[in-house]
Length: 68
Image (cartoon, rainbow, N blue to C red):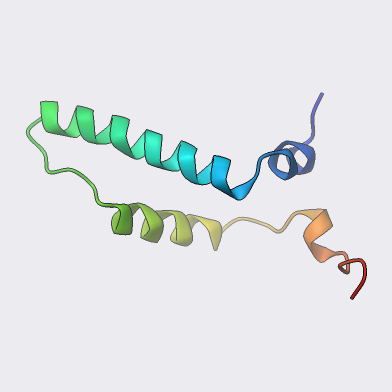
């Protein structure tokens, strides 16, 4: 079983961004079908930033960076 740390370390920033943007696109398809306005990338980034600030740090984030 993959741990939370291993899972998120495996995926790179571009992959995470792509997943977020694809999810935003799909949400906007559904919102338009419901007669709602689409969410913007700025709204997505603000929501993600707000959520990130509530998450605990991973153990590996607390370790010193090698070579520094």
